[in-house]
Image (spheres, rainbow over the protein chains, first blue to last red):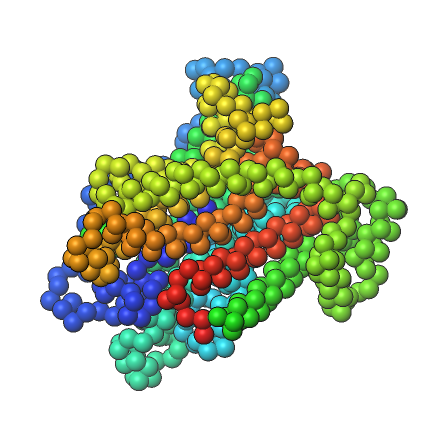
Length: 321
Length: 312
């Protein structure tokens, strides 16, 4: 998944600093003719997005899953933890539309309640990774010199470790704790390991924004480094970073499912799609529904976020016009 | 070239120490009882405790002790000595029996990537905007967006079990037919990425000045495409494929687990389930080193293939 993230990041026009990048994209110097143009890049991108069916499908799906995650009780009145062995692998019926799993739990209720943990991991890990990415990328790009050299090496090293492998090692250690902290060990692990691509994108946007006239002007007016960074440079780094982070959100949900499948992600009694899949993957010959529905939800969610990120990237890419 | 080589290798050495230090710190830092941590929730016998204390020099304490132990771990790793798992079996033995499966699967996956990904990428790059381009772009987005876990299970159920075209899981009796599904799943993400990369690269090169020159001096379209566009477009693709081969070997944990291929990833998942810390550390360390070396080779390959890259 990280590969696609990197690829998408490379295709972002603002990832190419200086004259290599295109005009009229965030992070690039504005062309002279710009003041005559009535529309900004953002409104151009929005015009493109509005006409893209893929964007609407992805956005509606993503929104639906976020609503399910926030209010699972709107969608089911069944208790996901009320399991009776006498119900074991009963087929889908009007009482339990996704059937019952091997433990006799209601698959629909468990899938709905699993949404909260899976989306939660994705969103909180993205917030953590985004926070680290903005701080590291901003410091490296703004101060340059040895700060940049050190941070760039750090990015290289963390990027050099495959996300899943490093997560396994860290979670192996975190999960020895006698307490069950629910989703937080996974959030922490994915967040502190998954920020590198976004940090690179922020860094290159900052580098190209730093040299612009209005930043020089702000500096000469006596603005502090902090004010310049937050008010003048940060907005330039926003759009490309959000594209990468949207794709990362999908990747994090996918990684969470893989880790829970391996037994070191979200642990029972907390419910997660990966855990549900792991419980029923070996016995699909007896009953397909306990495996099928969590897999379907997982696929649609990850697909929605990745398609969303890709659609936004394409809209902000002047080459595609 | 020589200076570039030296600098790149120095960088890799730095990355090696940084990476192993991070991995080592993740496992051992701030641990009350590291031996118990390695063994997970299982009870540790006195003999195992003595072996692990010896092996990891746990009698030394403090920051100095940490670096002492880290150095010990790295020097063992460099010598290829990975120690024993909790049952006393050498970890290098486990790896030796697992590598043939993993390597075979990665090579199969690479064949899929080149056969479908690169070929489709070239076609869709040449016929930009055509139906083939749009279809393959949408399909590649699907392959990228579907999690490996889900793709593996869906194909296993539909193609392996319902349709019965290929065996649903790996058996040594049918080493080729039963390897096709897991190898396709493993290569799916790379296939999609390679398709997009090739397509973008071909398209960019089609608009390049030297292509216009070649066309205007009267070369046939096939010659322009073959000698100028393709050769230049495939440079980034080849480097990508190089990195991917390392990725494919390291990334097969889920796929090997679902399709019962007894490779490195399968043993890693098994070690996680059995809470066998030393094996997890050993296998992950080896995989990370492979990943680093693959990256290095690709960078050097890139420099050889593309003379525009400056070595200074």
